[in-house]
Every structure is written in structure tokens, then in C-alpha cells.
Amino acid sequence: QVQLVESGGGLVKPGGSLRLSCAASGFTFGDYYMNWIRQAPGKGLEWLSYITSGGSYSYYADSVKGRFTISRDNAKNSLYLQMNSLRAEDTAVYYCARGTNPPPDHWGQGTLVTVSS
Amino acid sequence: EIVLTQSPGTLSLSPGERATLSCTASQSVASNYLAWYQHKRGQAPRLLIYGASNRASGIPDRFSGSGSGTDFTLTVSRLEPEDFAEYYCHYYGSAPLTFGPGTKVDIK
Image (cartoon, rainbow over all chains, first blue to last red; front, side, top):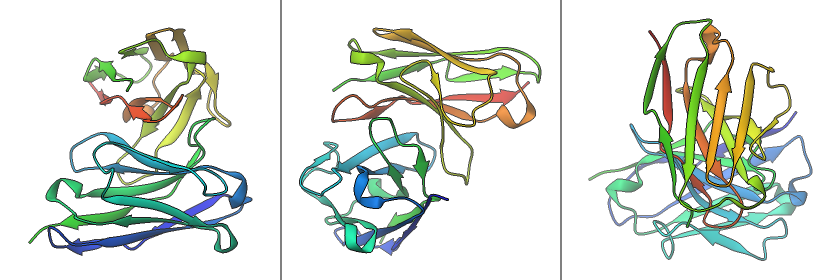
């Protein structure tokens, strides 16, 4: 069955960096666009970024453009999110999710990122 | 960017009652690229509806979606205990993709 497992979350100081990973299994990873989506405490879902199946193109929300970079390694069935210049408002549970159109149909359980001094 | 608004913010209902949730887009949504998700705390969001009115795989038929243009509705015909959750509409036509702020359906 389809599985997405995020890792790499944790506590980081403002201005710091963190790299999230998402390990995919149960489907042909290289056939799908992939997303990162987050939920801050007490807030709703926020789409952050998606990357095309081959990795050639990526798109970002304005809130993370220039600070976050999405990438993928289809040989390793893995999706990544490099997060730089982290701010307190980036504190959230970060989800990877499969597909954009049709919309994401499988999501991971999420990994918590806390930005605090 | 298409901005989605949802109403009401909270809906307090009893099991067996009908729930009607609204989602309004700031501009017309091409090809009905509008989806609905159910989200419970500590769980992954669950895709319910895509293309405004198509039920996702495994979704019970008490969930239905309707609408076009800028106005969309998710209806749960008879609430089951497991349906009390947060619901989000989602625009997925082109970047930036967006989510509405959510409607919480809680037990009256």
C-alpha cells in the first residue's frame, strides 16, 4: 500500500536550517508530482511547494519562496525540503503528499518542526 | 492567487443530522479544480471530494460535493460519530495551490 513517511523535524533556533525527508513506498514514485504542506499550531493547512515528477520544475508559496527548496531523488524514492532562515512562524507539522491533479490523495503522518530560541 | 473562504467557521450538530459546508473562491475555479478534505488531529488529512463533485476512492456516499465557478458546497447527509472533524476546501488548478481556513464540525 502507499506509504509516505516524513523525517527530519525537530527543534531549531530562529535563522537556522533544517532538511526534511519523505520516504515513499507502495507506488511508482517517479510517476507523481509531490507536495509539502504544513499546519501550524491552531491553524489550517498551508500548501508550501510542489515538484514535478521528473524534478525539473518546482513552485512555492510566497511565504517560503527564497527560503525553502524542494527536491527529489527518484532513484531513492525520496522527497526533500531544505528549509533555511527559519522563523518562529515556520513552527508547524510538515506533511508530504502525493499528487497535485488529481489533488493529493495520500499524505504522510507529518513531522513537527519547532523554531524557538 | 485564488483565495478560499469557508463558512461557517464552526458547525455544531448532532449525529444523524445533515451538515452543509460552504467554500467561496475569490475568482472562478477553472475546470472545477476544487477538492474537500477531512482532517482529524494527529492524523493525515483524508481526500473526500475532487473535481468539486467526485467522491474519492473509499469515501461513503453520505459525502457529496457540488458547485461551480466560485461557490462550492460539501454536504454530509447524515453525520456519523466519526465525521466530527475539521474540513478544508482546496484549490489545485495551478500554483499557488491554496486551502480554505477550514470548518470545524463538532458535536452539539
